[in-house]
Length: 256
Length: 286
Image (tube, rainbow over all chains, first blue to last red; front, side, top):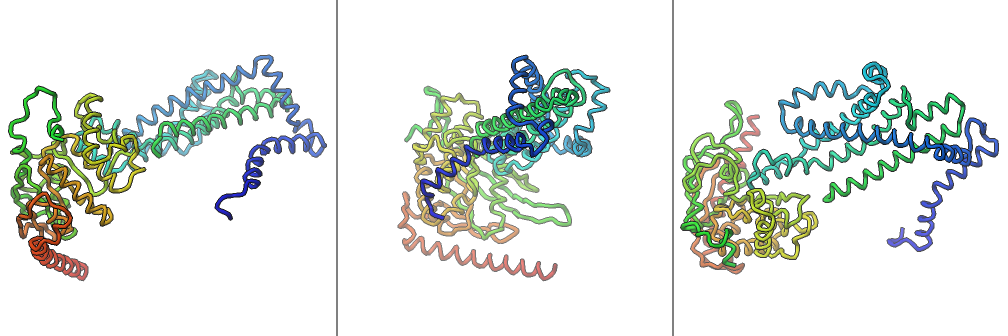
């Protein structure tokens, strides 16, 4: 290939990016309206858009969106904050690691969704149950990332800091946390998608509002347009969260 | 550049006999690794006094324990026997009174050049403005003023190591410990760095304990060179370098330089051979 692609090549590459989603929507529209599939079960994007528009107008869309996003934000923030603190301790102090790591390694592989029934018994259909499930899903991923990040902190940097006079109490803040930050952010970004998985499980199990709850309700009423609309919204929200998080990582881990 | 010596509040009386501080006393030092069965003595009965303001090089074949000696003075390793003291005060752990320059620059990648150099003064409790002023002085001294806002990753190896030296000196230590700091640089950069280091030292007259396996480097820099044996490390010889200062790169052609170099090379060669044979014996026995 040429070192510098020709102008037309670049133009076609740019075009491909812009037509990507319209192409997908177009193919979906044709498949659905041309009778290739049952339109009732697989409505075209136009009908999905109409269904979403109705929900926007009667206020349920924003309510659902608000409820779901709030659950993710509360569960994620608390799970991540606790996981980072615990991870700094287990990564730094062998005795704490020996005490906690076996427990965590036992609980970590259990899919958070498996906790839904017992969580309903514990918390009923309250918000606490949803927060707990998201917290649970986020905690282990972020804990593992923090723990590894701390353990991989360059010993040479720690020695350098100590020879510059860093007291032990500042070592975590000044050297170990920044060293582990790139790894922590990888964990946090993975946890963003996990928090949406667990959100869906929590809402399907019983809620009074929320994007996944609306999908479940529409299912019972055979409103396929609303069901697909709910899926589209979930896709948009979690993709936006992921992108936002990538941008955030670049701000917080500016030196990589 | 005389003000570099006086990093303190105006009006404060200068510490009495600044030049008389930074004296290193090493007495009967033994450093060993491992327990009874797998015990390996790295430093064996070393006694050494470094005068305040002296530039001393420790020269030895690789694996002779010279870095171990330095790390013990730095406070990273505890002696099995004997003692290390700075100005009569026993070393108990790492501290800002002994600036350390490592083989690798080990700069904080999340801090700029300015941030890296100002870190020591900040941790010592100085205000941001004062720490930055000290850092700017240090950057001027190592010739990196234009790179204050650069991150270490974007600098060359030689520049990174200069930041490392500036960072260690920003704490105005009485002793500067250097562990083969130019070992990973290319030959041209290394020569330039050696000259730059001598320039800085002639300004500050900080005591320097410099570890190297490079004979020319040791003679070029030092007032005194001590030569260590292959493991376990003992001092087998000591030479006084009387070449006039300031020295420039041409000093390596002076007859006195060549004589000292030949003397050191003979000793180092013998020790390297001995180490090689020891390894062979160990390999055969294993």
